[in-house]
Length: 119
Image (tube, rainbow, N blue to C red; front, side, top):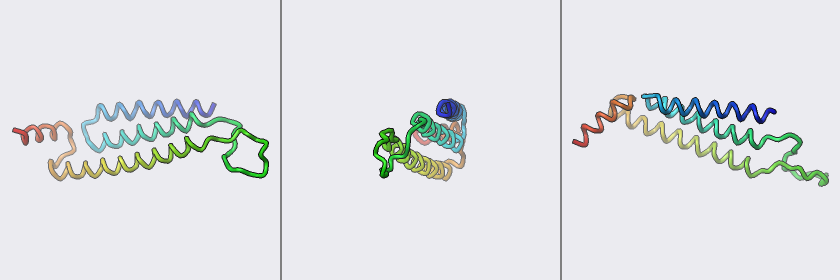
């Protein structure tokens, strides 16, 4: 039951983040919306892998239990968190570079300035 609630919240987060990326004209808001989507995806994977009755994959003296949690999805989620953090940082660095060049964060204004540079 808890896994389904987590999955529903992650779907709502993905929808909110996607709508924010599509409708926002500010680059920083687009980057933050992308962060919301990435976090929601990690939350969905966590909700999918959450099952009752499993134990951590730590070998103890009792080998009769064979219902261990799979450590591979945990490793993939941790790797995804690190990659999404690096992507967020790199995106913010590019946003600072764009702001220093065009002195605005509005996408439409930047596109107009970029079109003027090409002519």
